[in-house]
Amino acid sequence: MNLSLLCSLTLQSMRNRKFAVILTMLSIAMSVFLLLSAEAMRKEARQSFANTISGTDLIVGARSGSVQLLLYSVFRIGNATNNIDWKSYQEITAHPAVEWAIPVSLGDSHKGYRVMGTTRDYFAHYRFGDQRHLDFEQGRAFDGVYEAVIGAEVARSLGYTVGTELTLSHGLQDTHFARHEDKPFRLVGILAPTGTPVDRTIHVSLQGIEALHIDWQSGVRSSNTVDAEEALDLDLQPKQITAFMLGLKSKMAVFRLQRAINEYKKEPLLAILPGIALSELWQLVGGAEKALLVIVFFVLLNSLVGMMSVILTGLNERRREIAILRSLGGRPSQVFVLLTMESFLFAALGCLAGLLFYFVAMVLAQPLLLSFGLYIAPLVLSVTQLWMLAGIILLSLIIGSVPGYRAYRSSLADGMSIKL
Image 1 (cartoon, rainbow, N blue to C red):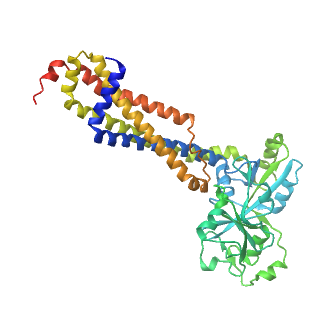
Image 2: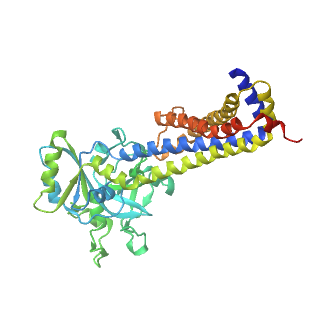
Image 3: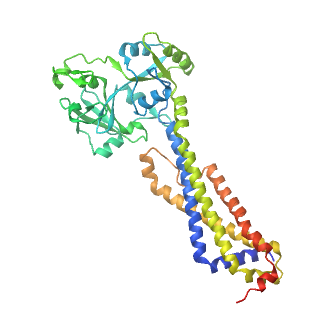
């Protein structure tokens, strides 16, 4: 009995049980789709996380921990333990090795989104992803004291357009007494989506931050209020900032300048390398990706075990079929191959259907994924995904060998003794 005949018999047997076969293959297909999607999302999420900031050599803030400094300066999560004196910022950025600097001032918010005070250098030098620069979807960078630029997510969720007036709030709570209602900002620019915390940030000038707090003392508005026009006539030079980013002329100077900043005598400062800090942060939060893959793997395993159950359940009904096959000259090994081939076809067809689901889903979901900063090539499989598919086929052969072995052990007399 040749292989082509065994294949024909296998397909005919599956056709006779088409309803159970289709349900089993759909179960495997959905599991394959989930596994491939989880791997693609895991890989791209990690890549996107690592590319949240690029091209920045050092981030400097008050002395704390590297992860904490990264969280509040880049991800706008949490608060600094202390601020940095403006004179310290000027002295450090005047170092011959420094090519550019981006100051960051945090502390205010607007409807749950963080407000960041900075300079126009931010739009010129900030990079993310593969050295991509910030682009404007609408408008331009701020120029005046009371002008603001928002990220794509802020614009989308709040429905803002260029020209909208914003009332910022002192601190992170949007309460009436904390609002800077006397100094509204006008929206002049909306940034294109980046898939980074930039999308969730409202950007204003450092002078704008100073103007907001010109009549505030220790977090409380003083009785001597200063309106928006009066503030423009005052000295709006920043006195303190939260952190700043540095780009150096030579990568060779990174560690030397980092050591000099960490040993700065006038105040306790900390300089970190963004790439190393991102790796440390990923070690803290990256466990979820592995847990997701483990869960999806067990879903797949459950589907393959279900496939084995379908074959085993039908084995009793097929005892006469197997007995007749053996009486016609079929060897026990060929019966084993017949049942194992059936599980292989289950898995192979399930993988093909799962691949189809995956490709269609990636094409349809591409715009949504891009809005979150994730780009997954819709018709391309990674090496890891190919190995996963090969592993599924191999696992199906191993699981399929169980009913194959049972059929192998069944005797001709046992099959012919079934009463109809």
